[in-house]
Image (cartoon, rainbow, N blue to C red; front, top):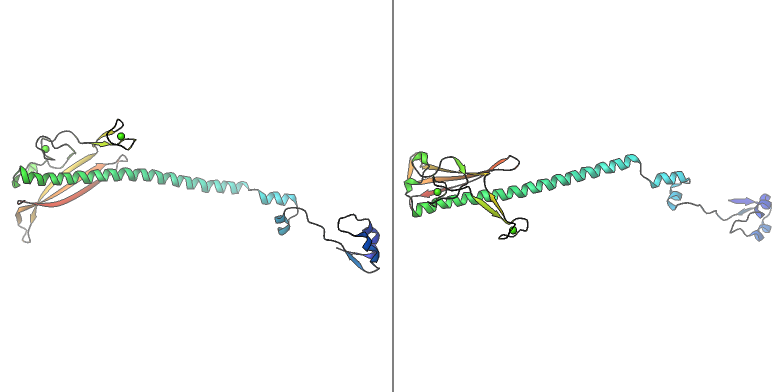
Length: 233
Ligand SMILES: [Ca+2]
Ligand SMILES: [Ca+2]
């Protein structure tokens, strides 16, 4: 701020640092003495923004209740989404295990029929009981093969079990879990195969194995495999 000579008396009384009083004598009437610029107090950011009051500083450095509530809402939405994802992952892991069991049991059944054809039953016996064969009709519990060694026949034994490794992930120790596969069912379907003239092939049949299971959520899923079995090995 320039100070003119008419105010020299006032200037002489100033004790602010940076003012050299001895130079005041060279200031003449009509001239002005440029005083050093007074330092602005406060935060650099407040100076840049032109804020001077402490109230404005307090307003800039805090958060309003609305901002806090909005941040909490976003956080809650994110956490709920993560929990849903975690739950869905557990369900998917369980379904993968059930799907593997269903596939394995369906293929075992198919192999059992081929083995029967190769070793102990006639081609004519490879039918369901309703069609004069040896295999049970419709969906049946997932039972052991019984005395005849054939899966899906009248002498089948108890419902199959599956030995799981338990919490330690290792098979063959005390915490293993013996799970009974009561939520599984199996169907052996045997169909004739028709030629182009709709006549059945006498030496060929189609085998369709379906294994279905119910999840703890009540969903019913299934796995199906199909193949042909001929009279000849
Ligand atoms: Ca059997
Ligand atoms: Ca174990």
